[in-house]
Image 1 (tube, helix red, strand yellow):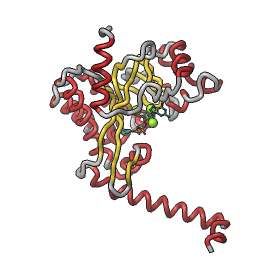
Image 2 (image 1 turned 180 degrees about the vertical axis):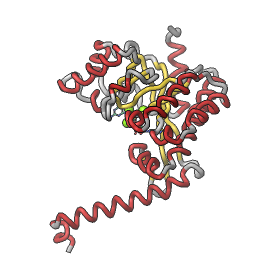
Image 3 (image 1 turned 90 degrees about the vertical axis):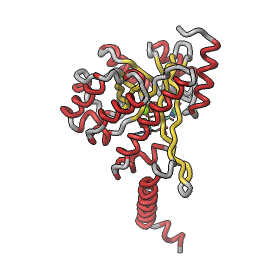
Image 4 (image 1 turned 90 degrees about the horizontal axis):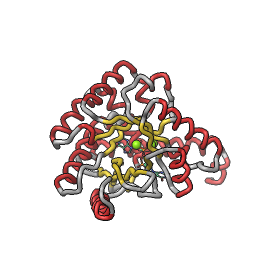
Length: 284
Ligand code: C2E
Ligand code: MG
Ligand code: MG
Ligand code: MG
């Protein structure tokens, strides 16, 4: 009878819905204990200078390993954690973990490698972000500029006065602030010029088509123009081949991330690259 059912669009649709509902419940119930069970870890994707490929920082990216569900990427589970509210606790852990890692690299003689941490709109709404950031930096004796927070345009539209207060407080601590996946979201250009932010990140969505796709090129150039006129740092994400790197370099984009340089790396592997880099070339 399976055949008959699969020809019926509605029952197929219902099955898909039911499956997704089941997945959602599975993920959400396992997420609740994931932190206590130590199922999360961070990997670090290098951020490089596009002119010479030197690593100048890294972005912390979450990974989740669950016995039942296997390895899940943040693109799958973050949204669920945001729906349940678990992201507030989990995000706090990420912040702590990233600061602890920077401290460990310093103590190991690797040096200070600034880390970027992704922050959910729910963490901004929670009201404890500034305190958490201040405490994490103090606990690990780190300067504010060691830490960069990345958030999406969604944050900027939820409660503008509260968000601006929060961003200003973070900036006063020296923390760097960037808008992630710029151009993918709501692009409140009007707010942009009034917010105390340092940088924009161009989404892989637009980088993937350059240099051949004309509309992707147009979007990258437009974002470059906005960044330049507002004096914001620009990072291009999702650089996978030399043609993309060369195009961005020639456009004047200074910094980038992508599989061409490295995917997210375990902390030790990144430290090893930094040691090699320091041995190869004297620091600028
Ligand atoms: P994002 O912050 O924009 O991170 C960049 C994503 O692009 C990462 O996926 C990264 O692995 C991927 N990527 C890097 N280089 C390339 C490339 O050359 N080509 C392509 N196609 N993709 C590339 P990932 O690790 O799966 O993370 C996905 C998203 O999950 C992140 O997007 C971020 O929004 C969210 N996320 C990750 N970690 C955290 C976290 O700790 N907290 C929060 N709130 N969100 C997180
Ligand atoms: Mg990011
Ligand atoms: Mg991004
Ligand atoms: Mg993203």
